[in-house]
Image: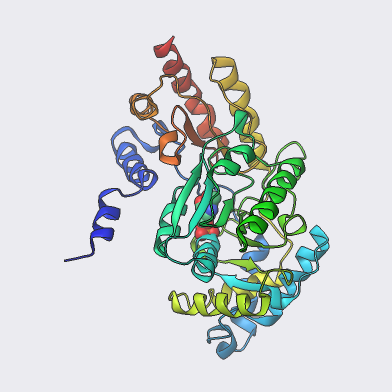
Length: 393
Ligand SMILES: Cc1ncc(COP(=O)(O)O)c(C=O)c1O
């Protein structure tokens, strides 16, 4: 008999993944061109050519024993140094190889961070609506998610966080640019949050960590700036991933930053490396570490997301959908046209639109649109959005 916890995880399996499967079914029935799948955050723009070139160069020219062997659980030192220098150049930070641990994507990095800091029963604050996999990551280490309700117009709800924080709070996860809302938190919001964390850490007499989950850092619109959080709050750990910026979600590559100012720095870095090992990752994938080390500043051509956002905001706005325009990531979070977002998304399916109910992100009354899709698919889908809106008029 499998564990009760896993039974319930299977039974309450991911809505988004289920939709992905359903999309494939509908495509078989109606033809792929007649199904408009906005459900999954899978990048639609290819990695830059340099990824393939560097991977080939490494495979052809570097010693096999280096490319395919074990290395330190933290990852290759030269790769971590190269990424640290890139961060310092771009964000004015002061990191070295010793501040980084290469991880199995952002998911791996968050699990390593939570394993490193959580005691059973510790609370981790999350801001609704949010990427609900956080609940699973937190419960992996017997932590408890504490949900901060949404703020006005997708703003960061610092006042709400103050009400939810308790003596049991050990960490807070912040995701900017945000999945599912596309919000990018401003410097003023980050400063207010940092003040709250300082005050509460002092009041409760223990470290409260800020975990910055930022796989969408490079995907921003209209010149939005994404503050680098370690500059605002000392006990910040940054989880990054190349899944979205380099369109490499299947390669499972990212890193965790542990700044030297973090409490018990040496111990924290060692513990995170051990966590990487004993969670079964052992180390991040070797070949893609080496690729990243050679092209630490590069991204895919991300312009498609700005183009898609422009079209959707213009057309859905014209049809009467209500939303705050995303400032980053590749998601929109409009209000559903009936209060029950699950029913609304079921109705949308009749028009062959696959949308994810906001309640799957603890944001009921909304739906998520992942616009990492081809521009042509958006154009083809507009008629369905129009008919769906007309149904509710
Ligand atoms: C907010 C957020 N965090 C983490 C992840 C996991 O990313 P990765 O593929 O790098 O593990 C995702 C993936 O979509 C995400 O949206």
